[in-house]
Amino acid sequence: MTETTSRDIIDLSGSNAPVPSESGEPGVAAKSTGDASVSPAPSAIPEAELARITDDVITQLKTVFDPEIPVDIYELGLIYKVDLEDDRTLKVEMTLTAPGCPVAGEMPGWVQDAVEQVDGVTKAMVDLTFEPPWTPDRMSDEARLALNMF
Image (cartoon, rainbow, N blue to C red):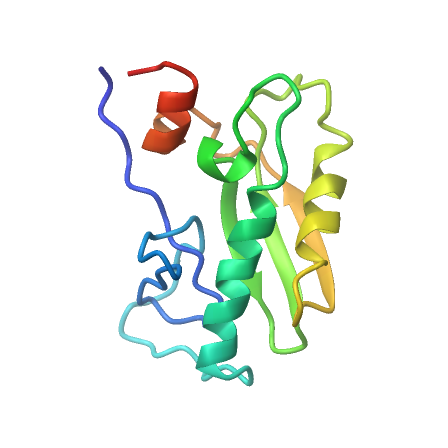
């Protein structure tokens, strides 16, 4: 069994603190790359609304599936970063299981359509990256169970 990497948190507030979902489970992806000694600027979006949007974004990401794998892209660990700007533009950085994925041209559009349905998001932009490359270590335990990979 391989050692799993820790999952990141969707933190739409811009702070470094984890934002749990209503179920208390952490989500995926907004890594802080800045200096930890610098406090982020306060968000123009109220904290309670950020928490609701975070939960709704996760819910919507879980509706997008790779057609060849019976697990959603969130649990597969394909979402690397999510950022909600003050103008309510949601930026998503994601990857695919492989650069040659047959739906590489379509999946970012599926993700954009899904997250644009969240109340409070005015526009979504999805960027595809292969750095770092996706590995099965990014999958959640739920995904491993669904794929019988324990």
